[in-house]
Length: 362
Image 1 (cartoon, rainbow, N blue to C red):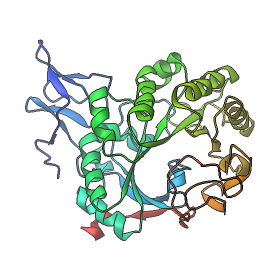
Image 2: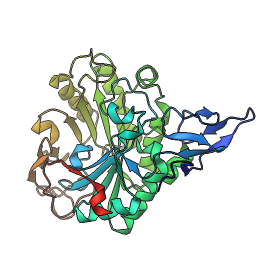
Image 3: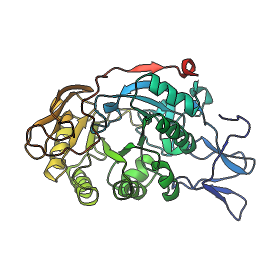
Image 4: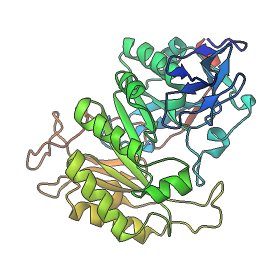
């Protein structure tokens, strides 16, 4: 557990000739003097090394439907134990979890839990997986990996909900312990990444390519469409063409609706028509599984067989209605396989959200 004086030791850093220490976890490469924190807030130079200051501490735990991550092709209908910490290594002006990801207050970290306690809680709560979410697990790399190892010992899967902004070496170590991921591809222009998120596009594309071509991690992509920023037909054409050409047609894409938040409160909500347009373009360009999110749209939220067009998994928000997959994950009508990680029967968790205090599992 966390030692509040020294923090939890980390290894992705090196000393510079000018006396500073550079963090090598993510492409920000923060260069720190003694006592300074990186932009993420949770990695700090203490006693001439970089430590994680939030190991074993969380902003809260909650049992969610797996579809809320969103993951539509990974153990549908099952409950997932979700948690995050504080801080983030991006600076998104539209952040919709800003109270946690932008927090500079340690009081945000209200719940303490060891990796073993989290794994035990997930098992006792009937969760098939644990999700590292709310803020980006990249910045609590060591804690997430230890939790994932403890979960794996109990047969519980691990899910990363991430912006994918991470360096190559820690990326390899991190995904060695992950079973699934949802990666935010926040836009498809460097301008957007630089001006709106304070980061860069290319490292995110490299994470997606790595996941597809060098791992067995099941992953899906989410793009939050912000009016006037990343929602043009031209950009969605380019994004979906790149996904099909570089990652293949089986990677699901979720186009989700923006609501005004954090530093972009003056922007309008995303019209449902924009999400429908994006989904149509994706399907036209060969994406087999394209979804709309953050809106009530049973058609855009359901899974269809790309071969015969029949509905495979019916959804309205996070509730499953129809289930037309065979035991091996194929279309019941034409026997075409559906890409994903499926069990013979779907879970029955539904849309419930259940906050959990981990102290009862200690």
